[in-house]
Image: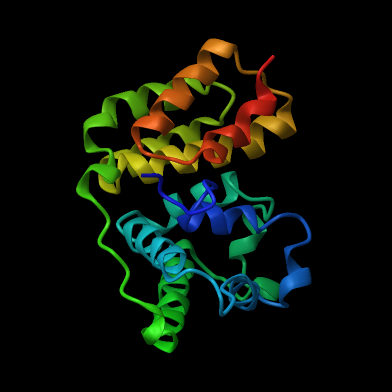
Length: 209
């Protein structure tokens, strides 16, 4: 069994992929843009996955959340400066996301019961492997590597690995980084162990040289 119906990304990392350079086309503020993507016909499990990830990230310091969000999106550090985003800190942003998800889930209470996430999907036994892959992505800035490491230890290896893939996709593409076939194969093996669909790790396949 894979983690999403269409075998693509899920949770907060799925939402991060929507925050590209022209994200404001979907709403004048960040919260309104999220509301656009949490459309009425979305599978409740998808919304629950976003909420679960955001709640996990609240275990981290606000500055660490900001590093992870900035690394995996095209919003840049100014995202947390208020202004048009109406976002003032990483902690407040994750609280906003959990609130938006709670509102959606309560509004769609009749859509069906969301199944509990199997404990093995957290990837606790893969913590050392994920830490190794964070170190192997040597084109990421040191502060991103530190933030991802903290996420492994204080959130879950699963969430940290998906955030690693987001950062690799964004920063690797912008910097012209290249992955060896062996490196990509290791990432794919971790994704398989975490029951990801085929398109999750494939987000960084274009970096293979």
